[in-house]
Image (cartoon, rainbow, N blue to C red; front, side, top):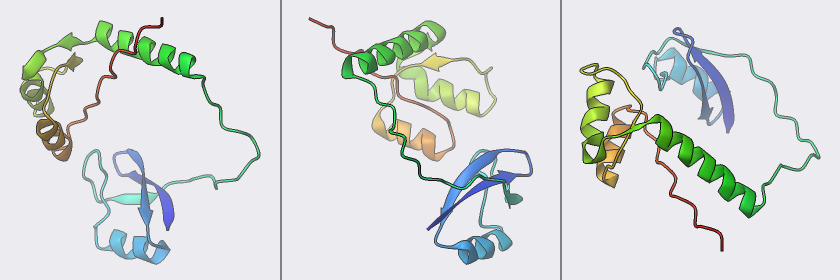
Length: 135
């Protein structure tokens, strides 16, 4: 397997994995490689640095610090978005289709609704649950 850093003609950067370089070449030549953001098939390989193994250990956070970071992120999301409740799928779709102005929203969606939105190219993220209170 090989991973390529790619860029479309609208300057969207993304990565994709291919079985080998010949597979990428064949798919790209037949316009079967497309930008996940805009759908353009005018895609080229982008400059990428090789992956170099190092002995440095990955930085890990203690559980208490991780919960603190999750709580901070959740508080930021809650402060900077409007809760639209069960109307979230409808509002997100309307924004995606340009029917209403984009705005930072949050709300509820069933797993099927969330999957449908993602399948249709609507960018959504789950809000992390509130971490448990410390004793």
